[in-house]
Image (cartoon, rainbow, N blue to C red; front, top):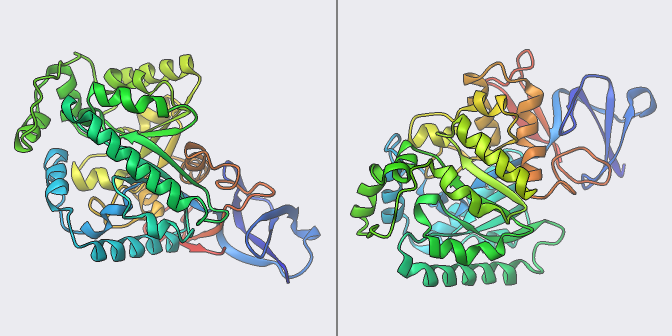
Length: 401
């Protein structure tokens, strides 16, 4: 047999949950060939109990921090978490590479087919050259002091060049995009912003957004926990003038040139921020995606993003896992379990779209991933153990292709 015929209790297409007796037909490598009725599908149908769906998209990850699994205690708060990342991330390269390989294998086993991955260096490049997952590589730049803007920018360009050269011919049909992205509003000086903005057009640009109250406090008043963090890192911030506005409203206009904007975490985003951001993207003609990493938010700050608020404003939501330094697993399903436990009113169909199509759209990969459209190769997963159309603790994911 040179094709597969899949049926299940339900099929999620990427945007819709089908309850009729449709049969999904793929070739041996997983390319979608057709949807047909059961009566027209003939023999050899593989029927499964549960929901068939496209592969998960992990819109935000730090693969290069996989060696730090379990090293940082929970609930430190973001400032102290960053201090520990900076001070404790340096391990022998061999250990880091082994951890990266194990982390990617974990993502594959958990049904993930594509990743928006943050890279401060090229340590994850060798693993990505194997072409086992599709990656959108965000080469992260940071530098709060104006005088280091040029060397930090040049370092980012060097990492980007290494990725471009290393991935040019190594990944076959797997998508691999690379772009410079700012780390966070509190770590990029005005001078560094000006250097990276010319690279935004046509690209998805990621930024850590409003993960802690200290971020808004810094921009509104110039005080708070980030000031303590700067002092501990011996970083002079005398150049910084508070804007009197929230973090998002202070930096968001700088993102106007991007094709897609991917804000990550969004734990302290409020209605005024959402209205402001929506007005900005409407004027610029680009697209905004709000990436949620609830398990990392619980790990670091012991809070959750305002999901009900984001839904009320019809925000386009994607799902990320953050890193193994700030999470117990790299599993999109584990993120959905946390969301479903705290927000049981969210329909299964909506959650699954966040985890599949929306992530693929954010990473500009919908031509191949995120939905069961003819000619695409999105992977085929089975979710089992769903209780009354609700993801629960016992829900499992199995990769069929």
